[in-house]
Image (cartoon, rainbow, N blue to C red; front, side):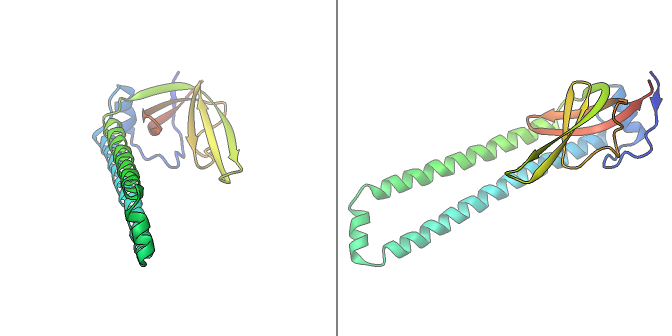
Amino acid sequence: MGIAREPDLGIYEFTADDLKSNGRGFITPGQKAGLQATGHGIRSCSTTSALVAISFVGIAWIVLLALMLRNQDMREAILGTPYIPAVGGSLLLGAVLIGLSVLLARRRAAQLEEAPLQTVEGQTRFDTSYSPNSGLTTYYVFVGERRFSFGQEMSHVFREGQAYRVYFAKVGVYEMILSLERLAT
């Protein structure tokens, strides 16, 4: 099979050197930088989300306690029961769970930055899935038996029924196509 040049690769920005290097089994420094940037974004997003969650919970509890402790009867009822240790324990458990989610996201980000190059080739076919709960449509491109998911229709990049070779990196739910080529049949 020879390689046919694809005129419009749409969202994919890779060079002929990237494709050549991927064909030899290597990820280029530019592609590595893209994986590292994605890893940095994952870490940043998880840390920011955790800080926002902790801030909202903290503010809510401060306001709630201030309102509840305004009168003497409520102070006596709250402080005289096991309510305070239970609330403290639930806050501690929540903080531990948020911390674990941040650590897991950081681990996945580090794995993505070091992800091995994977390759798949085969004929393409398209499929879609609509979720009435979210109102979102997911577009799928199957290359051989491998399914790639997209948030937009990809017929401007892939031609259905054509054979492609796709070079990608995948860790968990994170998947990045590094380069691709249409194969002549």
